[in-house]
Image 1: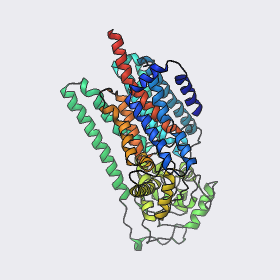
Image 2 (image 1 turned 60 degrees about the vertical axis):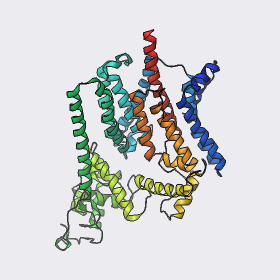
Image 3 (image 1 turned 135 degrees about the vertical axis):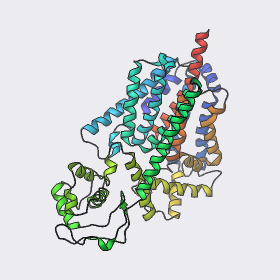
Image 4 (image 1 turned 90 degrees about the vertical axis):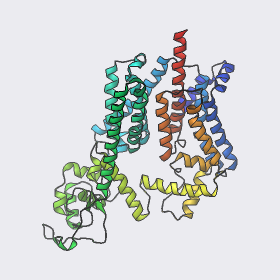
Amino acid sequence: MSLAQFGFGIAVFAVPDYSAKLKRLLANPVALAWIGLYLLFMFGGFASQDMDYFLKEIRTKMPIWVMPAALAFMPVLSRRNHSLVLHFFVAGCIVAMLAGWYNAFTGNVVDRRDLSPLVSHIRLGLYLVLSLFILVRLIIPQNADLRFLPKGFYVALFIVLLFWLFYLKSFTAVIFFLILFPFTMLFLLLPRIGRNLRIGLFGVLGIGGMAIASYLIFSISQFYSYTPVDYASLPKHTALGNDYIHDSTLFTTENGNHIWIYLQFDEMRATWNKKSAIQYDSIDKKGNPIQATLIRYLASKNLTRDAEGVNALATDDIKHIENGIPNYLYAEAFNIKGRIYETLWEYEAYQGSGDPNGKSLSARIEMWKASISAIQKSPISGYGTGDVRHALESELHARDSKLLYHRQFGPHNQYLAVWLAIGFPGLCWMFFAFLLPLFSTKYKPSFLFYVLLGILVLSALNEDIFETQASVTFLAFAFHFLLMDQQTRCHAVTYNDT
């Protein structure tokens, strides 16, 4: 990626006519606002004690100024060429999808993340969301001149990529799509349809929203519901005559079934060792004890935790347990309820033990708490661009957190990360840079820009979007490239009129 950025920079900056380029840049207030944001990160170095990390951060964040400056230097692209770039982006998502399909069909999938071997699982989900809206744009009749292939191809590709998005079970990306899609449909259709169709559109979207909300509420209520247990009436022996263990002090459930009853460890060990190459006293492919994964999986299917229960497992069930999947719902391809359960289980485990290690959501919560505590101690100036992780480490230590933290990641929230680095004024400037196109009369963004802005604003809630070069490069380029989309359209209209 560094080589690609370097080549792009050479192609843009090495071409003469710097006077015209500078005029285009100075006439682009959004590009100037992003360059200003980068300068604030630079100035944040004066407050940093860890200069090595500061220099690393500044290198990583370079696309924040390079991309807007380079795109501002460029002449306005024609609609056709602009569309061609978007086609290449969608093609890249197709390649990533095919790589995931290959892993799925060859059985090289232990975790859902293995379905995205070329790029981060979360990032691919966001790329797919943007690609889906690009395809919506190409399907719209008014944009026939932007297509390079028959309309039916784009419709089919939309269906395939939507299928892959849900198959990935990237919870973040699915939520973003469900939030952005209704607003996009309203944006596109309301100006073009009559009163009755508008009422129908609002009705369809309203019913869809209610259905999604009802599904979420039902799934959450099901997770917290359980079958009451009368411990006195539970059988004392297995079918083989061995004693059961029924632990009445633990109330953890899996799909509403109490986990710590109907336990016969010796039977489970002997039977499991006959059915699997991974021994009972070993670990699964995610590094967890097979015993723990097996017990939870059996409970999720309401099977007794003994020889009879293990013998009832199918071949696919054995593979799932070996792969570290503790609940059969997690393994179902399109069962979003399983993903909801997984998130709720992780949260409940964190609430019960206070241990956030090895769990994505709980680690984020712990980092958010530490970030807010640190911000309260220095809300205006922050801690400096290079000292964010040092401040987090100190705060976690002060809070006696159980999180094993060695400055390996940031707060997992870009708003908190910026506040920690360059203070509240820096946070305000970032919002200004993001939202300026919505309030400046110079810009009338296309709906694709709104979609990208939505992705950016939502992603910043649970990711450090400026902390990795892949993320910051994509967002900085896409933001300013899609902002050119409206300029391209206006340019094309003016050209045709003359």
